Length: 495
Image (cartoon, rainbow, N blue to C red; front, top):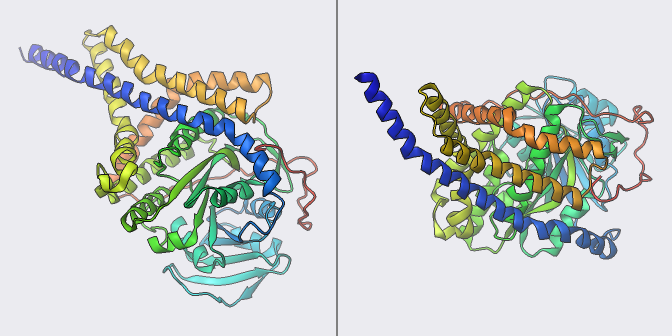
């Protein structure tokens, strides 16, 4: 009797939740489709805009205000030299680079001080944002626009705040140490600030640099990664940036500027108090706080994401490193939404409060729970031999089928407009990865995101070790620290 009662109750629960789950995924993917449609004209018109920008703005130094590039570095000894070397040859008139060593345990400090011939200097600026203790400020004998700060460990946000304190200019670019900027990427991002009205923050699409070749820090050839794990992430990035960020531009709902590449109006950030140091999602939290503050003040403003690739980053090829990254991302999402929960469903915050914020709650934060519940219902039905194959077919179409359509469309759109991967083999690999992502990889990310939720609830704010393999080099790459020159050929488009 007890078993029969349990079985009847289980069947009732399955019936109650099955319809809700189907409607959830249909609604979620319909919104994704809308965002994808909104991103299409931006992607196609962007190439024409770039031609106009190059003709009227690129190459002219006067229209572009000076900018500070801030690079927080923790255990980045493998990549820091190549990253900085590339930054020193960007197509931009006037900029400074501030590398902040956040108490690294490897040779990051030694590499910077030796390769760029650093010498100790006194600070000559006010400390607007409190940070952990600074050990020393160092200038380069070779490059007047390069500053190195060595400080006690305080986390990425603390390192960024330290860089903001030392920055000279009204705009700053927050850049990960393992990220390489496209040679004209800074020009393209800053052009948006100048052309678009009231823009206070600009993000850019990030490309995957794994197995690409570069010469003296500049990407010279875009190659498709050899690693399956990295290849699947390419497909994932294409989808995420197109309708996860670019699609929000039209309706003003961008709630995240990636920590890998984020250009900001410094005064806007200072008015927010800088980056928040006690979160692992400092990039999203700052973006949401900018929305909050600007709405409260009644200031006209925009947070914009460029559809073209402005920078390249190394993605994890180790499953354990990737797991730590994804659960940390979900912790950061949860933390940012919880800290600013008063914005949710609040018309005072416009599109952000009434649409974007609720979408991120139900469409991003809670989606792993809904999908996990769907799979558990199906597995339980298999165990008790009460499978409703109509439900399973609808669940599969609503969750996996829609995802396949959206991802394939995103990939085709990216290829047609940007054309980063040119060979038939690369295209075939992407098609295969679009399919494989939904059978194994997606379920793993589901588990990682649920783990991130759990770790947040128990108060875990650790970053997790992110190991680097370093950038691939072409055979004629200059490794001996020769002077950075300006004779590199600019890569067309987004290379």
